[in-house]
Length: 304
Image (cartoon, rainbow, N blue to C red; front, side):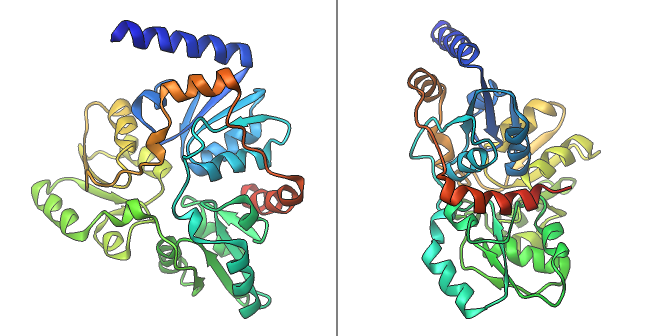
């Protein structure tokens, strides 16, 4: 089995070089996929890497909206998503038609769009955000302007708590993060009284209230490296544990729930990556009609 895996890795390395490809991998991906990445990160970090890469081919190991964002920023690159079914349930909870209706109800409101959305929805928005920078983005908007925040109501609630800014929240959510329950956090805090508790802002507010820090996956990675605590209770998708353990072998990381698994994120494997590069499929390309408007919203997010 080990020889078979080595042969597969060699094939991937060879075709990657011949295609001049770069592997951008989200923190929730399988460990075997993270281990061959050129860069592992959260949505904001991967968006920035996509914008700066010199590669001809971007193999985006994440979900569809992330590959679309790479296409927005790099229209001259070939963007591959190794499994066409790697989507995001939250992104499917909002449509262009529904957003347009909401905008009619609130004329003049600014639309702040979490990146977990289709490109066509981004094109209907004023500015994008990620879980890492959502509060900063909202703070940029003048206090007298109304804000529609889409599509994650729980990230929106967290931003309101951070900024004091009341917003119109879309009723979307991440099913994976909703599997993280307060009773599990409470039990683990009793079991590991010295541990710090971190939670992703896609978690429900009751989880945020129990956490020491509510931060993005990138923030969790940094905190794990910097904290003096030797134990961390982790409230997000369990794929992140691979990187946490790999980078901090002297520390203990405890998932709040083993049920916090995003099945779409786990569809990308070493086999699908090889298949994708061999066939140059599945290519993700955003039409110019949508791209120019959607890119404007992403560019505003990426402005320093």
